[in-house]
Structures are given as C-alpha cells and as structure tokens.
Amino acid sequence: MAMMMKAAVFVEPGRIEMTDKPIPDIGPNDALIRITTTTICGTDVHILKGEYPVAPGLTVGHEPVGIIEKLGSNVEGYYEGQRVIAGAICPSFTSYACQDGCSAQDGGSHSHGYKPLGGWRFGNTIDGSQAEYLRVPDAQANLTPVPDGLTDEQVLMCPDIMSTGFAGAESANIRIGDIVAVFAQGPIGLCATAGAKLRGAGLIIAVDSVDKRLQMSRQLGADITLNFKEVDVVDEIMKITGGRGVDASIEALGLQSTFEAALRVLKPGGTLSSLGVYSSDLTLPLGAFCAGLGDHKIVTSLCPGGKERMRRLMQIISSGRIDLGPMVTHQFALDKIVDAYDLFSHQRDGVLKVAIKP
Image (cartoon, rainbow, N blue to C red; front, side, top):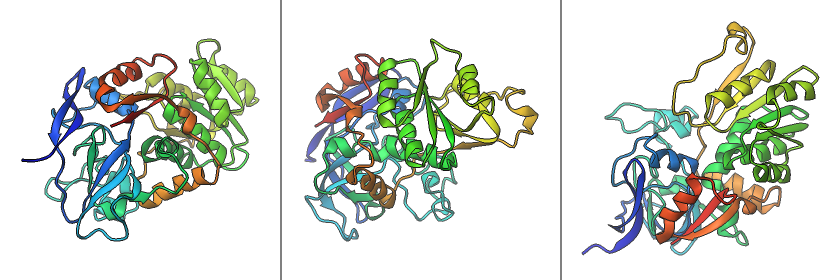
C-alpha cells in the first residue's frame, strides 16, 4: 500500500482543506523533496476564492524549501539529503517558449497546444508544495542547493515573491538615478521596492494604506511612503517629481485603481511594470493613456524560475545585499494551514508572510 502524507487541497471555492494523499511516485527526470518550509501566496488566496480556477483535489502551494528524499535516475549533480529550493515556476526548458527566452511561459504539452503561464505547474497544473512531500518535475533544470548558513526563512521568498518582485523592477527598465513609484506594499510590492533599490533607483516612492507595510518598505529601500487613504497619491507624486512624473511605476496589486494610478504618474516615455494578478477586465483611461501616443511601455511579468534564477536570488541574500527574513511574520504547522489561510486572506495581525512547517 502507498505511503501516505498530509496535503492541503482545493475542494471548492471558499474551501482549501487538509487531507491524506499518497506520497508521489517519481519518474526518471523528477525528484521527491521532503518539505521543511513552505508558505501561502496571494495567488493561493485567488485560488481559494475561486477567482483563479484549478482542479478540485489539487494540492496547492508553489513555494518549496526542502530536502531531497529521492532522485530520478536521470538527475545528475545532486544528492539525497541535500537542502534545496525549486522556483514556483518550474519550466521544462524544452518548449518553444523556453527556447525563445521566455521560460515562465513554458507552454503546456505539445498535444494541447501552447497556453500562457505554462511554466507555473506547482499548485496550478500539478500537485503543489503545501504538503509533506513534493514531486519536482524536470529536477535537473529546477533544483537549486541552498547555501550553507542560510535559514529556510531567509530563502523562502526566492521561489516566488522575490523572483516576481525583482522581475517587476527588471522589466521596469530602471536606470541608476531613476524615480520609481511602487503601488501596493504586500509581499510582492515589498520585493519590487527592494528590487528597485538594487537596480539603482535614485528615489523610491512606496504606496499602501497599511502603516506596518509602509514601515517595512522603508526598511527595504523606500525613500518616501504615501498612504493612499490620507493623500491623493497621483497629485502627491506629481508634486514630488516637480510635475515630470516617474521614470517607472510598478503595479503590485491587480486592481483597476492601482493600475490607473500607476499609469497617471508616468512621465512621457515611462514604463508601467505590472505584476498584479487581475481578476476582471482592465480599461485604459484615454487621458492617462495619451490616446495611445505617450511613448509609454506597459510590461507584464510572470515570476522567472529555474535553477540559475534561484541561484542568483540566493546569492543576493548570501552576500547580505538584502534580508527578507523579517517578512515572515507568522509560523504555522502544516495541519493548521486552514487557520493560516484565514489569517492571511483577511490580512489580520500585521501578517506579511506565514512560514508553514510540516
């Protein structure tokens, strides 16, 4: 009989529950990792609410830190017992999209044609990381050893939010000395703020309504914080920039209102870098869009994955350029994950990220 493990599965909109599942079998190109720490992402909350569809019975979660339990026969250069992470996006690196330089958009199987978001498999198209064990497909391309001396909490942001937030800053084409506005300072926005600092922004303006988050954004590199409940953010940013507008704005929430504000504060020729997951249609206001003649760039990014991306992110942490450990505000055992979802989805008690430990 198959050995069993605990896993958090999507049941129906409004319900993610703990259940028992068989420990996954692995194929020759896979690895089985025993999860030591994982977490809940804003995207998982979209899944919980039924705003992003996944199959009932799927194990959710896409941010794994763990130890290699078993390696497929084709996987070389790793050993059982090694501490590793895998990116939330675990591309095959064999698809057309991957070879075209856009690995996050890995593009599904050949028989089903190519779909966007194909590189995101954990907790989307295959069982994810909110469980005791996780099967990592294409392990050779996706497992990265954790450097000695780094804790699970320090590297927990690498698989998804750090990679995503940094991608937002990278796609924003930030040059040394640029003025950058980051809209929303949840975990992704905070990482975008940190990314903008690392890219050499000369002034970073962070926008949110939660003072604790704004405080954290100052720790991670924001120079000016604006609470949108207290000021007209667009007016305020235009004042700060002497009417010029920002070189780049990063949208890290996924609402029409934040997207629109991010567009309104852009200088002519500026870049709007969008990271939010939108759950309804966006409209472009004619004035802010300059009737399509503003030389603006609107860029979207999905979190880059793969072992080289993860290695680079952990290098930044190893060398002390940035410490995202303080973003882990709460700890839960895996069997209390339903409570963790409740806390996280209602953003109670100053929660930023929760560490989930099997």
